[in-house]
Amino acid sequence: MHRALEKLPADRFRGAQDFANALANPAFRHGGEGAEAAGTGTTPWNRLSVVSTGLSFVLALALGWTLLVPNDDPEPVTRFVVPAPEGVTAYSKCCGPTVALSPDGQWIVFVGRGVGEGRDPLYRRRLGLLDAEEIP
Image (cartoon, rainbow, N blue to C red; front, side, top):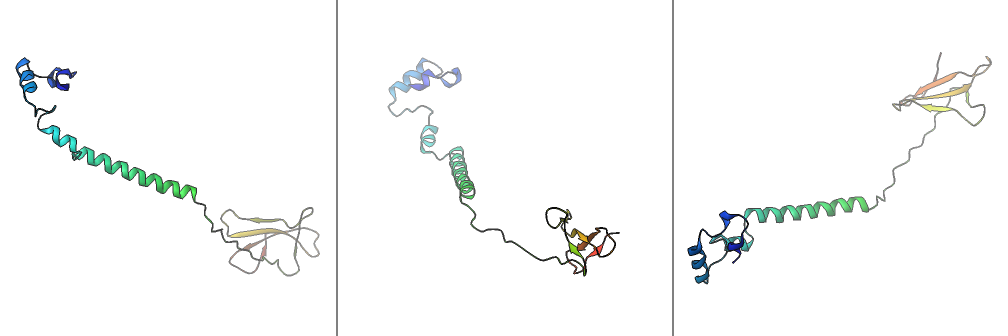
């Protein structure tokens, strides 16, 4: 008789007569008529918990799959030649050509050895164009 041992007095029997009637009735179940419905698992909260647990499991599997399966497609490599203007050689004093790409990726700047003037000017070329121009 779990109902007689409930913590809250409102959940217990109202009196000794109700307790005696429950003892005499072999069909008595704790919770009354709603006890059979609660035992079947068809309440809205039970369905919601089953659905949310299943959805969580499916999402966890999908996340695990995306994190654990390697991506075998390598990124494509793009290579192109940037010719210097006629009569100019791109160079560096120590380690090969000095070339810089603008932060937006639209301009390329390089040091060139000019002819005749004894200075090493900077040249820039927009990547969409074919000719480089000297930066004054």
